[in-house]
Length: 168
Image 1 (tube, helix red, strand yellow):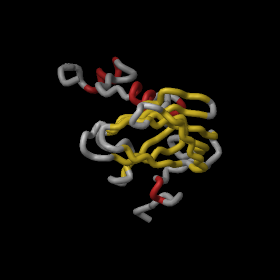
Image 2 (cartoon, helix red, strand yellow):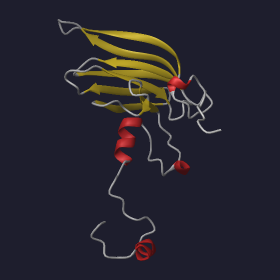
Image 3 (cartoon, helix red, strand yellow):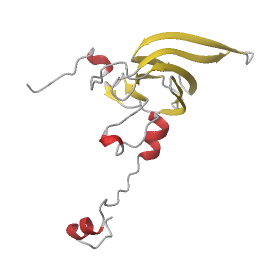
Image 4 (cartoon, one colour):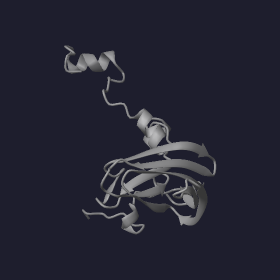
């Protein structure tokens, strides 16, 4: 982009969509289970969204990776990985980009010292759940959900269902 010798008006005339060196489409698809937000009128139609409760901010915590590996009408497969070798990480997972979905249950397998696995099922009736990831760990979750049962909102999990308005 820096080497382009054309002026701004020529670039706009030549390209209806100017080139952008940042491509988020793949990341949006694999981490959120969503199509690119440029589709659907610009709204993000994510299956899940993440929050970092330790930093009070949206997004994945530092050193945490997420992969949506399965999408069904009533279920999402989700892998979470803590890449930190020394620090645990906390992640809050939200049902939908705007909390419009509702989680119903979480299924996961746990292995013991003999490498034998047992399945666990946790009942959830809410639009959030929290996961604490010990250092250097990975977990795969099968998360049941009901879609489009909550009113969409921009509120974060710690807002208590209300959107803070700093300037009134």
